[in-house]
Every structure is written in structure tokens, then in C-alpha cells.
Length: 546
Ligand SMILES: Nc1ncnc2c1ncn2[C@@H]1O[C@H](COP(=O)(O)OP(=O)(O)OP(=O)(O)O)[C@@H](O)[C@H]1O
Image 1 (tube, helix red, strand yellow):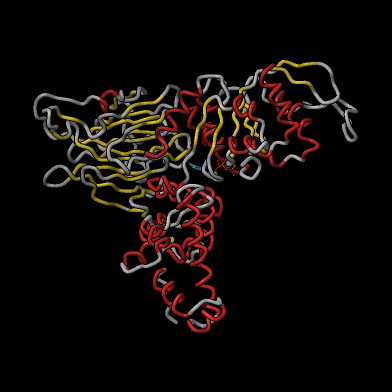
Image 2 (cartoon, helix red, strand yellow):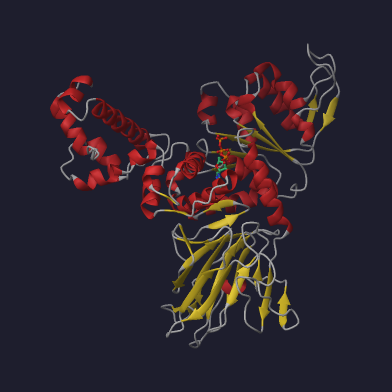
């Protein structure tokens, strides 16, 4: 949301600049041993250095007609794409931000020498990863590690990188060809920072795109956004509140030919109706009381770039008419002026409302809807992108640690389970706030379920309730519970599921208020005792130990 997330934008734009400026990475294959955590340098003279990325075609089409000797590699997914490093038995390989690391990425979350990977083990298929006292840590399954043994397919996270152990040459396919686990990986679009698609294992492949965390559920959308970015037609981003519509708009801007121009972001819902036209199109001195000097509107400010109109559904009808005219003519007229000013602006609009329904109800101009709806990008709610919850939570943990001067090391696995069960009506924003709150309030060095906001904690036992009682008679509850208590969009099961969450909360409050005396709670709720007992069982409500 424009304005509300201003701090995010500042942070994001800082991050983005780093990513864009340094979209390439450097690889130094040192002939001698690696640096120690204290930073013992590999000799530059003895190293072969290239600034060229390893071609992704290696990953895409790794085929060989005959069995390969063991070739264990690190596959590194980073904001610029995918890179690979071959490991040699017993020869450590160091990854970090700068020399003397052998593979370097300019990511501010990485330490100079961040982690060391060594091919070990009797089978030569184990990789020992050691964190080199990095500031932000090396992470696996949400836990910060000092060292760990990785097998083929295992992955760790370092800053924005995901490092996975793979066997080059891969596994035999039924047609006899040998595939890399990354076969099918493809770079979408061009530019310095590229999105990697189709990584190895369904469900666990999450790429970081200019700090956008994007999992499998987002890939088709990002590919569509990428194509839309190169065109000029308007883009309409739809999705529930907090899903990342604005981030997607930034993505479209940054991937398009206007990325060097301004991106101006306007929250249409936050401008008072009387000032909308002046805000959008500017005004001349004396145009209205208080117009003491001429002022450009956001269309002029965005000239040569992109104008992001957030909460478009809140735009008053009169301003909608003017906006349509501007979009058709490519010219604006400041309030209080008759002079037309040509503007070269690409418009991206976003809304959580159903504009089509609004236009049918006469609340939104249908012609404007059609005009803006050049390409529609629908951002799925977080509950439909569950594979992103873990990396997003880790990402927000890091941001919250930085912002609050905390050093919370990780998130417990059962906490992730609770996070995955909750339907997140406020989507990614709500998750971000939940993690920030937990980081600030926890007294431990790992976030546990108890550190989560109550609504998230309360959602946790829902699925268990369905499993625990297969005699659940409440059809509605059973249906929603089978879905893990997860709402599915602003319709049908979604509403029902949310309603059940609320009902559960009310029951819990009544029971607590009645000291868990069910007869009293039933009286307070004006509900037959039998019904209450049934609901308590259905929802799996249990009295907490004293
Ligand atoms: N994929 C993502 N990766 C990292 N952070 C994200 C992602 N999506 C959303 N966020 C974060 O979630 C918050 C909400 O995102 P954003 O403002 O883009 O949502 P929105 O859909 O535009 O919200 P609204 O409907 O309220 O305008 C922001 O703090 C943003 O940084």
C-alpha cells in the first residue's frame, strides 16, 4: 500500500539498486585451499577468475550418453539467475560477498566469507557446510546452523541465495537420457537480474526476484508480468489486500524499458475527493482556495516512467472520467488551466475490489475498466502459495532483526506448521507483521508458536480437530476443516472458513470467561449445552493446563 509501506520501499529500493547494479557475480576458482573464517586469503595470482556467469544452458540441457564419474556441484539460485560450482573432494569452496570467497555475490546480507562447502564422506556425496561466523547466518529448514552435512538435493539459504547440492549428470530417465535435476530451468526475460523458473523439486523451489520471494504459485504470474513489462499497454493488478500487488507493479516497472524513469505511486483511496484531480493532473496558481502556486500532478511527475494507481476502485466517478480522457489522449490539463500538456506515462493500476462487479453496479466506469484492463495480473492470496510461507517468514525474520536490533536465530518447525495452517486474510503483510511482532516479543532465540499473534495460534488446532474426530457432524465445519481451515478466495468456502475461525474464537473466549465451565459458557452464549459440547469437540478446544 502506497505510503503505508514507505519504509519498505526505501529498503527495497536500496536492495534493488544493489541487485541491479551487481546482477553478475564473480567466480574465482582458487588453485590452493580456501580462506579460513578469519579471512586467510587465497592468492589472486594463483587463481583463475571470471566474471561471466556459468551458462544456464548447462543446467537446462545437461545430458550425457554415458555414465559420468561423480560430479557433485552447488547450484546457487540468486537474484540474477542460477550459477553452479563443481566441488572437488576435500577441497573447500567458500561463498560470500567479496574476496577471498571463491564465488561472490554482491548481496548486503552476505558476509565477506559467509560459508564453506566441502565434499566429504565415504561415498563422496556428502557436503559439509560450515557457517564462517557470518552476520546473517546460514539457514536450513528455518534454523540457523553452524555446520551440517548435506546430501544430494539438500539446500541451505545464505542471504538471498539458495544453495543446493546436486549431482551433475543427474538421474537416468526412462528414455535413457540423463537429466540434471535442474532440467527445465529457464531464465525469464533479460536484464541484469533474472527470475529462475522450474527449479528442481516441485514445492520447494522458491526464487528470490529483486527481493520478491516467489514460489511455484507465483511463477506463471511473474512470467506474464515479465511479458507485460516490455509492452506499453496498461496493466491492472488484482488481488486481496496485502498480497504484494504493489511489489508486482514495481517488478513490471523495473523489468520494462522505463525502468530508468520514475515510478510514482499514488493511493487513490487516500486522497480527499475534492483534491483528486489536482493531485493527479496538477493545478495552476489560484485554481482554488489554497492553490498559492502552480503544482505538477503525479501524471507529470511520472513522465517518461510509470504511474502506479493503487486502490483504483476508490477513485471518485468524476475523476474516473478525467482519467479516461487522459489515457485516451495522452494529455493532461492542470486544474485551472486550459492548456493541454502531453505526458508519456505507463499506467499500472491495482485494486482489491472486483471492478467488473463495480462497473455493473454503476460504481466504476466500464469504459475505464476496459481501458485499464490491458493485461490483468491476479496475485493469488498467500493461503494459495503455502510454499512461500517459509522463505517469506525467514526473509521477514531477517528484516525484523535488522530493523529492531535483534538477533533471533530462527523459527521452530512447529511454528512453520502453524503459519502454514493459518489462512492469512491479511496475506503477506499480515505475515510480515506477525513475524516482526514475534521477533520483538520473543524471549527465546527461536520463534515458537507461543510467540505468534493469537489469531495465528488459535488457527493451529483446526486441522487437528478434523483428524481427531471423524464423527464430526457439522458438515460446514468438516468441509472447511478438511481444507485445513483455509479460506479460498472471497467466495464460498473462503467465507465459511473465515466464519468458522471467528466462531472458534468466540467459543474460546466464552469458555475462558466462564472458567471452562461449559454449562455457564453455553448459558452466556445462549446455546444448548449439547451444541456447545459438540462444537468444542469439533473445534478441538481443550482447556490449557494451569
Ligand atoms: N513476494 C514478496 N516478497 C517479499 N515481500 C513481500 C512479497 N509480497 C508482499 N511483500 C510484503 O508484504 C507487504 C504488502 O505488500 P504490498 O504493499 O505490495 O501489497 P498490496 O497487495 O499492494 O497491498 P494493498 O492491497 O494493501 O495495497 C509489504 O511489506 C511487502 O514488502
